[in-house]
Length: 314
Image 1 (cartoon, rainbow, N blue to C red):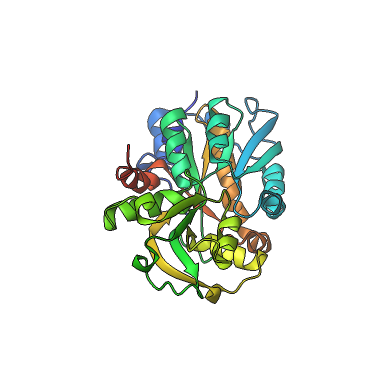
Image 2: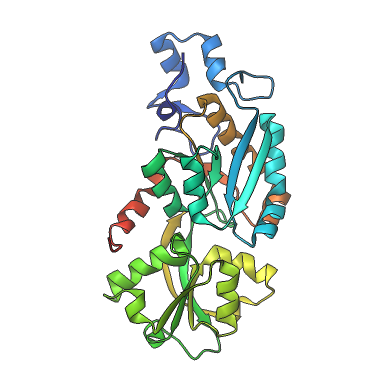
């Protein structure tokens, strides 16, 4: 017998990852109510290397969005990948990419099993391919999300968004939540015009590093990224936070989700999420990643992204 993924990853799931609720009743009561034997339960929940895994693949294909450069992101994520391999007893083939479309294409071809991706990217993937959020990355100070910001060089002489009108405005990628989509919605809602009409020129840098370096050098007058990326890059690019001036800050954006294909075994989906939550104990590795760890997540956590998307031009 197999339970649907929705039963496990329901809104009743405990956000601490320590006790799990099936729908709105405890597992103990649900099991008793539908007469599932302990053996069948262990078939569903067994996640240790010696547990029930007969329908698991031999290896997992995992994707992670690059939060630094690709190479640096790969290096910083190694402790997490090693932890997942140890906990799941599976080899993990991980690719780090800053190409948002790659995640969509890979899920379409079933060339990805799990991925850490941007919130807007996830909403698209869920709609197109039914992938499901199972966990959310937390900011380094433990917030369940981050903020999109528009910044300028502290020496640019620009002290407000309106003073940046008619100047060069940089974004990272058209599929980036904080690096394009959310600030674009801001311009449309609050300034009543698209970024292209507000600025003399709009450019896409491709990576947050290039955007931040371009703003610091005043190659770009304004740049859109997020507070978490700025904190991370200030270390790797060796700049002081006071060298940039924040002109605008968004509402809290839900943290990047870890997502799964829904056709994977339910026991594997559960075990993967459990392994992520257990990684929260590795404080030194989290510090290296400049991450606050992970918490459970569900699709509804990203409904705010869907609401924001309604303001985008069709």
